[in-house]
Length: 527
Image (cartoon, rainbow, N blue to C red; front, top):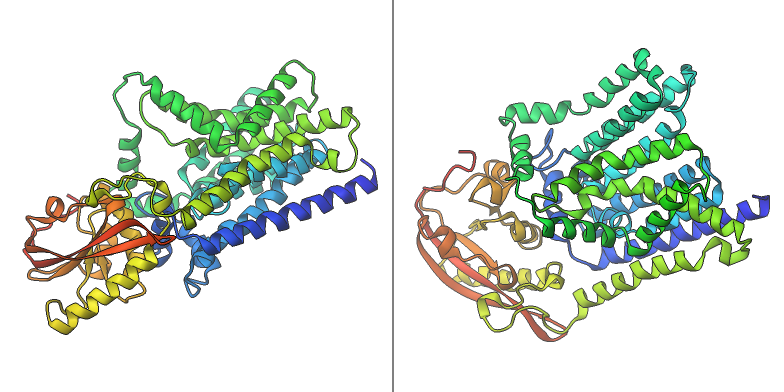
């Protein structure tokens, strides 16, 4: 590519970064947390060596970018994911450039930002996948350079150790990071066994493994509870469930953007038929980075329900291959100017992401009332996904008035805690209601229902015999207090109902209960 084209590509990359970052900042500032995001806020609120569900990195990222929760808002807590998205765009551009050219790098950056998984789930919202994706890409960037080398000199050894460092950071972000090593090990075994003769290969393995020490230390202290939990999630009877399998495949297509998926398939077919060219070593590394994690979780889906984002990182090397294929195809067509920098198919991919994203934002914030159930008061708004991230400020305001009334008439006392039986939506009640009102939220219940709150309860001080509490149950996620707590309290008194409206129309209810006289008989969640 000539200097003028290189300059235009860099300008297009900068515009892409600025535009997508502006969109992410807007969304992060104007949408309440999802259930998962606000749960990871507790990782920063109560940092530890590791946590029940995931390693500690996502909590550390929140702590870093919110300055240890000094800035405690949706934007501040999501800021790490937004900054990481910028870095991901730059890293994948550099990978595309190093294996093909700058145009391939630009196309890879565009495809990454058109992916729902990469751009929204892990790019706008703060989840363990956010830091994992960055370290996955960084490790891939160095593995592509170093693994094919026949002369493993000092420079190669340093680059390999750097890749291993990033693999370790990916593992401490999310356990799935171990699959990077699976792909790298397979490449060395099949194509370059000289690595097995070098001490640096084993030192690199130890370097990556050293990042698991906080996870291991925490699990030793807690009887390997994380591994038991995740083992139970993947264990299942060997009964074929093709409905789960097709749901998983459909989810992969949607999460990665259907147009991206089509381009990936077209690119793979072109490389297979030798109608597109790429260094065969790069092709091998990219495919082996994809296969282990994709095969494992897609195979699981034949027997049990899986979540499509579990295979999310597998598609980043395929995005790079699709970008290389598209770069070669467009240059062969001798496209110039904007048609070269932004082919119609890439514009369509971006539209297919951002138009539904805008629609979802409008639905969540402005749809009149609910698209969920309306016949039953206790289930009003149920099955309405747009309500998961809406209305908590109204619940807080309504509940504050109820607490003030109860204090003035003496029916409840100061420092009365709020309880909830599940971490969703209990964590949202914690963040949006208990936190601003300086109240304590506790979550008595089964470990599989309350997760990290089993430890938070101990830190905050569990209920004592005779204590009273409040319970808030929303109609879109209704939890019946009598079903959960009738054996634990002397009385359960329906206190008040808060109406949550959207665009002036009833969306759902929040029911407030007074829980009187704790009997001191909650089951220990660790037993």
